[in-house]
Length: 126
Image (tube, rainbow, N blue to C red; front, side, top):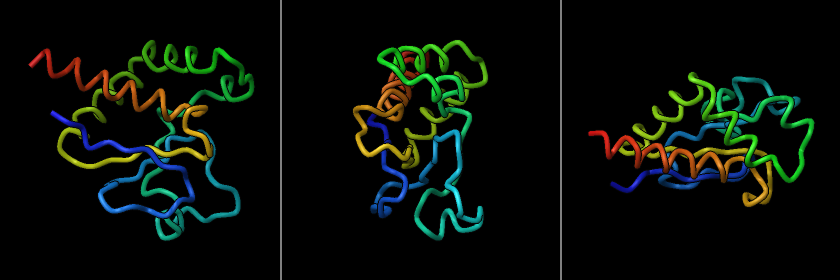
């Protein structure tokens, strides 16, 4: 079953079919009131549970993707949240977003792959 999963850069114009836009970032946008996030098209829901830890963000290096992946998979709460999003994306469009301009250098590319892997894993169990 194809996932209804997309990615986006926070601040980009919402696109048709994106569904619920999740801001998977550690830090909220500065100078923006919480009630304005959705109105301004930043994201629908702040979802920091799957954001990189403060430690990873402070020590960005070549191992960031490997360490982020490990951080998600080793933590039970994060792993269960990942499985939840995989199941939701089978039925409802969701989009995961971050501030980074280049997705290939952003944790959201890893998160997207993890959600896809989780979806495949749950499909084989059912």
